[in-house]
Image (cartoon, rainbow, N blue to C red):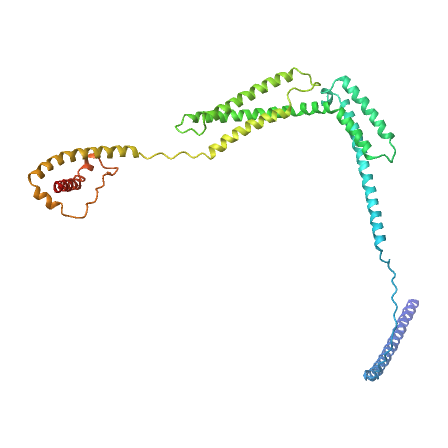
Length: 379
């Protein structure tokens, strides 16, 4: 027990000693820091005074000194070309451009010839292809020999060969295989052209039927000549098509065709042109205006005039008898110098001939009496 107590006493003493030492150290540190702060403050004050002294400007004396400076220019760039050098350089550049262009065109001519040879060889060797259908075995053999020779010739040419040599060789091959290409084109395009002709014929026939039904009108739009022309064109086109198809069916595919696509489209254009002409005429057609019934009115007025003249003749006879018995009374009626106005003979359109005659009798009677009086005075 004593030992343990002694140990604890020693430990406590050691701790107290350590604490005292730490306290002394802290105090020393605080003192040191205070000293440092004091030195800093003193330095700041000293610096402040120095700055204040520096702020006071010292005005220097300005003196202007002038001196002539000599300069020399040296051109380090390329000098300008003379006229002769400029022309020579332009010719040189043009020659280089022409050489590049010639090289490009030469390569294009070689590629075009090579592609033509390879494409035709592939199409001729294709089983069931159009080129095999449109050519016989002998023709295919001849074409293959010709194409192989052209291929050998192409690869044997030197690098400095001219462009025209390859273009001429290509033209020879194209002219030799022209019949084959025509047969292939006709074989591929003929069904499309026949379908276009069939469609145009059906359209034209329906138009003709509708127009024919309208021909019974009082004022038909189209004349008989135009209708007959369209009908004749339709029948001739049908006949031509049927005969051409029959002749073409009798030929083999590797033979030159009888019915050409160009002729088929020409027939289509003829039908279309004739139909469009009639359609435009129907669009621009204007019916003639109906005549007003003036003829009937004129007949009525003429009849009315005839009735009036008959009545006048009867009245004139009576007045003549009265004038012979009493001539003095007639002379008094002939005194006015102004002639009387002629009455309106034409009757209105709505009035009848019997009603027209009644109001016109009085002025006409006065005219008759005046005329008779004049005759009596002359006697």
